[in-house]
Length: 107
Length: 113
Image (cartoon, rainbow over all chains, first blue to last red):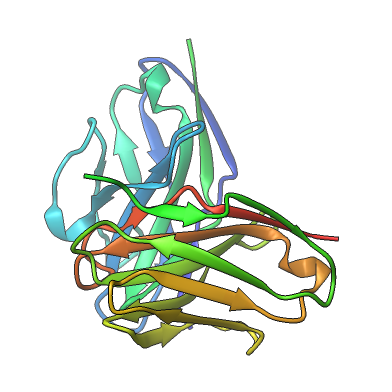
C-alpha cells in the first residue's frame, strides 16, 4: 500500500539556519511526489513537485529512489517560511498525504 | 481568475442526519478531488471526479458519495452522520489530472453533535 511518512510533527529553526523537512514514501512503481504548504490562515497550495526539478522560494527537493525519500530543503530559513508542510504522493489521480510538519522559524 | 469556492463554510449537524457540501472549481478545470482533514488522520482522499465520472475513490464507507455536474461543479454527500465525520472537508480542482497543479478551496468545517 502507498504510504507517505513525515516523521517530524514540529521543526523549529532559527532564521538563517538550514532546514530539512523529511519525507519518506513506500510505492511499488515510479512515484510522483509533491510538497504542499499551508501558511497561517491561507489555503493549502502546491510548493513544488519532483518532476519539475525546480526551486521555489529557495526550497528544493530531490527524489532519492534508493532511500525512498523526498526531503524538502532550504539553505537559509526565513521567518515567512513558517507554515505547515505536507508531502504527497500521487497514484494515478489519487493523492496520499503525509501527516504534515509544522515549521517554525524563529527570529 | 476566481479560486475554488466551497459552500457552506461551516455546518453543524446531529448524528443520523445527512449533509451535502458543494464545490465550484476554477473555470476550465475539469478534475475535482475531495479530501477529509482531521487532526488524527490528517488529509485523506475521498474521491476524484472528471467530466462527471468518478475516476478514483478512497477508503471511505458508502455513506460518503459525490457527483459532478456538466459545469464541473461537484457535490459530496454524507448520509447517516456519525460523530467521527466531524472534519474539515476540502475540495481541490485541477485542469485535467490531479497531478497537474491542484488548487484547494477554503474547506467546509462540519461539526456533528
